[in-house]
Image 1 (cartoon, helix red, strand yellow):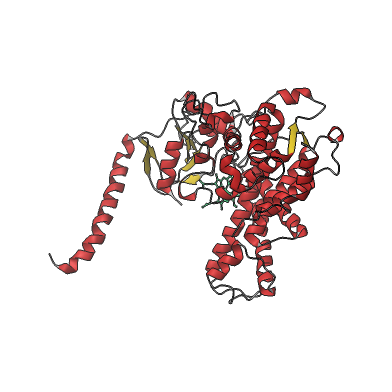
Image 2 (tube, rainbow, N blue to C red):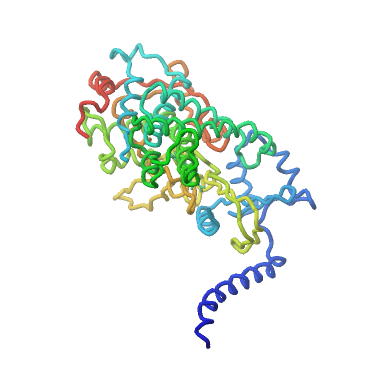
Length: 479
Ligand code: HEM
């Protein structure tokens, strides 16, 4: 064989095999059924089923029920030729998502700020009122947003942090209301929120560039990357068109972190506080562990995390029971495929039902019961541990949440410090709200990122020493 032909064959053989695979897939297509799902009508498919769905029921819970009805982890819905694949199992979601696709953290600063804002002026536990949902949420949102804004854009003054946290909040609210994949008026609503999201990305970017030009920028994700790709010397605030492509990439990555990180972390922390105020038995165990391991004279730090297994288990159980993104983020199949023996046409929207996976009876015993112990090894019974919810709570495959470690670090830091210094109870006037445990459907709003419905609770410093720790934050503490 001529050696001139060899490189050609090296390219041609895999190319040929690929086309043979696609050809066989098409050939097999008529024999492979779509995955199970509600029966549809010709042309319109499941339009009526989807239009008449119970809006009171959360999407993830509806698909969990549907999975049981059809005895399948993979479900198919077709609305006017738009195919959607719902994945109620982590194994399939992982398989498909892998196949198909697409500085030092100043947490201590934000945690200290949060504790100071929450600290009452004096230690007088009986006179501390309930904290209203809006007030608590605003403190937590500021914590989550300002941590990210500092890391991504180097923002540090309270005034600008407040402005940009508010901007992210407005954009997240509108996106959350429309992003549910089943939302029929999605395109119309998208036109309304598009300028808000664009402002969210452009405004802090302009600010970081001008602070670099003035020499006042703090080192952060944006400055590090602009320097790494030698983009700083080409800055011209009026016409920054040199290597705009890479700058656009860094700008969008920064915007994605700022946008994707605030509301999600907020939800995880708000759920954690809700649970602590309604489950005294969980609070007691967490307090006991913190007092035994850390003592009461300092705040816990990230380095302590491995020594506090109950606290870890508590956060995992919050992630499981009250998933922040119960339908993760939908992806689109880029070519015809086969999944579990079913035909999946190109263009199908794939929805991994994280909420269903995390409430599956096969994976978690008594899945609607809040029980951090399911993640703790018990030497006496040597029972099998439940699967770690973090395997699915942040999405799947190559596009898995890139901020997951950051989110878990910042949420851990805040929850650990709050627990170390405070007691939590339900609202003082309503004993019923203390005994009723938060339900992941009834007590939550539905959406892309879910949040607990407004609740009240009492957060009271555990002692005078604890109040002093809240006021001092990490200031006098060796890090
Ligand atoms: C509890 C907190 C969080 C949850 C539950 C969460 C969840 C998710 C999920 C489900 C996805 C989609 C993954 C997929 O497509 O399969 C995602 C993507 C993403 N998240 Fe998070 N997230 C959280 C916090 C954060 C934080 C704090 C940041 C940034 C600091 C962040 C940045 C991102 C980015 C940039 C993406 C897009 C990744 C890509 O498309 O390649 N997230 N997140």
